[in-house]
Every structure is written in C-alpha cells, then in structure tokens.
Image 1 (cartoon, rainbow, N blue to C red):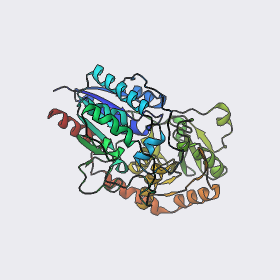
Image 2 (tube, rainbow, N blue to C red; image 1 turned 120 degrees about the vertical axis):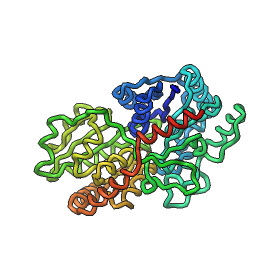
Image 3 (cartoon, helix red, strand yellow; image 1 turned 180 degrees about the vertical axis):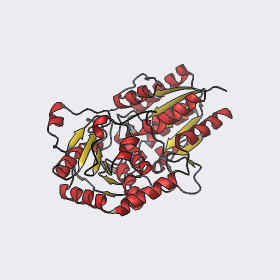
Image 4 (tube, one colour; image 1 turned 90 degrees about the vertical axis):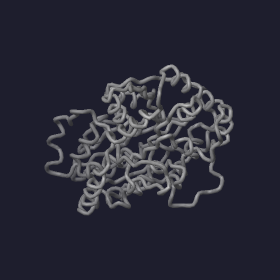
Length: 412
C-alpha cells in the first residue's frame, strides 16, 4: 500500500545527513511511495533538488536566544543540542509546533529522521510512526562523542526543556536527548566495526548510506590528474557556520591544507560541498590546487589516492566505501570520534586542531604534511581500507534501509 514518507534532518547547511537519507528516499519513491524532504538550508536543498525530490519548508519558529557556552569539545547529543539553542523553551516549543503543522499538512504516514530533535518531538506528539537513521554515537546506550574520556558532571543539557513539553502531549519524560532519536525502527548507517553499539541495543546496522546521482561523472579536466603524481582530495565541508556554531567551523581544513600541500609533489582537488569560495580565496590557492565547489563524492574518492577531510560521518564512510585512506582534521568532538574509529581500523591518520577560541582553531602544518606523506607512502593504510570495503559489502546500504522501512510501513 502506498505511504507518504516525510524525511527530516538537522537543518544545518551540511551534506552528510542528506547523503544518508536521500538514497533511502529515492529507493522508497521507486517502490511507489510518496516522499518529501524537509531542510531549508542551501546546500541540502541543492542535493534534494538534484535527486528530483520534493523539499518542504516548515514555518520558522522563534530564533533561540539561549545557548550553552561555545566549545569544540562536544560531549554528546545532549551537549550538542544545548550548544545549538535547545535550552530555549520558547524556541523548542515553536519549532515543535511548526513541525507538527508541516507533518499534518503533508499528511505524512511515517517520519524518517536523522538528527532533527523537533521532528522527533513532533512525530511523538502526533503519534506518528518514527524511523530513525543514526550513527552509533547518537545511541543512548553509548558513551557519546567523547567515549575515550570520562565526562565532567556539569555538561549543559536541554532535557529539562524537553521534559516540560513532553507531558503536555501525554508523553513520558526522557533521561537524555539521545532517547528522542530511538524510533519505532532504528537503523544505524554503518557496520558494527565503524559504528559499534551494545549488543542489547534494538537497532539494525544497514552499512554506510551514501548519495551520488545516477550517471554522475567527474569533469574531463580531472582525467589528467593523478597519473604522474598522487591525487589528494581535500574536502572541507561547510567552512563556517556563522554565529550559531563557530565551534564547528571547518575553515581550518582549508587553511592548513593550503599551507601544508603547497609545493608538495601531489595534485590536489579541493571541494567545499556547495559552499563556493570567493574569487579572492580561489585566486590565492597554490598552483597544485584545483578547485570545484562540488564533485560527485563516491567517484572522487575512488579516483583519489588520499582523502583529507573534516571528520564528518559521511566523509568517513565515503572514504571507507571507496577503499581510500584518509588524513582527518576533525573540527569538533563528533568528528573526532569518527576519525578515531577510522584510525583504529588502520585506514587513516588524524591531526587534531588546537582550539584558540570560539571558531578559531590552529593545526600544526608540519604534522599535517608529515602524516600526508606517511599515509601516501605506507601501503598498510590502503590495505586496511581495502579490507574494510570487503566487510562493508555484507550490508545493503540504502536498498536494505529502504526495504526495512517499507516492510515497517506495510505493517502499520
């Protein structure tokens, strides 16, 4: 029976969450279902449009005015939510009401979410079935983003705000924000190796989910690169998030790579994920750099000898699926967690930025240059990446996720 699915994601100007949800939406559409997305940010909107899918924009709720102190040391989803404004009851309430209106107007049968708190609240308030696509660090039974250290006792949390709203809709309180991301069906966009969760967790690993438009090709000018010298792909993601989340800015990846790789015997392709650089910034790039705002990620990773990126979950999965080793410059703790898992699998190395203030980070250029040379010259990194490709193939990715979602919806 045909169903109406509404896909929701954190409305940040990033591509990672769209890369893991658009392929599932496309698969469901080919199965005859009606599918719509909801993300007003420019870069995600471009990907949704490229995929030929509908993008609905909710009424904007009140802008948050209460934020936790800015820091790139983000301990967990609770802390992340406090940092981006969910300490503000008025804003959370307005955002939830706006999502409830959108869900009702669209007539959604099922909400498929990846990291949108107000969408999960709205789905529960309306008693709509919720499918959640998460990464391991978002599961409430895990240790959060900084799993290698003991957390302090005073991490800011918006749970009191959520627990004030939930009873108004006849819903039970939560222990932590992560509880909101456990759906009636919860899928993990990775494998037990890339995204470990406790055995008792009621989730299904579906493997990495990545988006690339069918038939997408690299431009002809890339053909000549990588033939006589290694090809390095530098992906920054969103260089700056403005005043809301300067602690997540990735401009440090751009600045450190231009310094470290200028004059190196490599070809560098720089992309920013639908975030165009200014003419002055492009003109200032080293002679061995080739810039394009966006390129098809899977094809680019497969062509490259090395991927340097900001540590986003989607970027890590793209490299692993292509068997391409990485040097990762993680720009806040969620990305450091992803990077540490890649390093533990032997498929890359990590260069940690030093936080010099909100949104201001520095990287040791010499350390970055040394680690790039090491990963390019040591075949063990490529061998480890190739091993992971083989293990990933046991999972179905987008097609398996869509099958599970379709089966779940059919049973409603």
